[in-house]
Length: 290
Image (cartoon, rainbow, N blue to C red):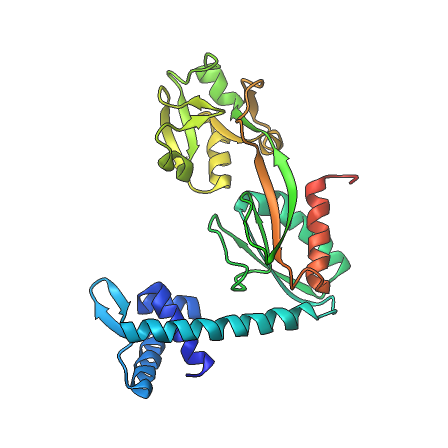
């Protein structure tokens, strides 16, 4: 089995459909189907069962995937060590972050990167999904969750209080809610949090008496909904102030702050182009004069 065949096998085992595997591999799905069928013919074994639910590994397929994963780890280690030895302040750096953090902090930092290191090219991905640095899905991740891995280098960029905000228009129409109750008020919420909690809260106050009028799965959509006067919402105080929103119940905050972490793989932290980007990102979150 060569590495190209191993990549096809791993992608299909993880994604379970030709279409999704093809998207991950950036090829057409006919290619994936043809290569997997050829691999099965070469090995003389059936690796997948074709079921209505998708491609399911056979017992022999599980053995093949285990061996392919070892090839993958070796390939990733080679790539990390090669890239880590690169002292050129040029080339590609991939950053994964959220939409809000990208617009407010990362993109302004990239302007400075471009001015001082014009040969560095940044590929920026804005998504709420957690990426895997160990599998080289990105070089730098900026997230509000602290990962737990000995292979990763962490740096806390910010720790912000979470406050309750509304637009001036909303407060003019609906008034300020009585402290400790959302009765008679509309709410804009972060959808994953709202769905996952038996008793969701805003600034640690139960939301039960309020009416959810918009649930968003991205920070920028949440902030925009509050700014448009759809309802009250909980966002980092730093971002609410940037948006010019009105703070409601300013003495109340969520018990847990909103933390921003920058994460990279330890093999890449001394790479010149990655280091140049990291330095500017740190400055952007530190603020002017830092």
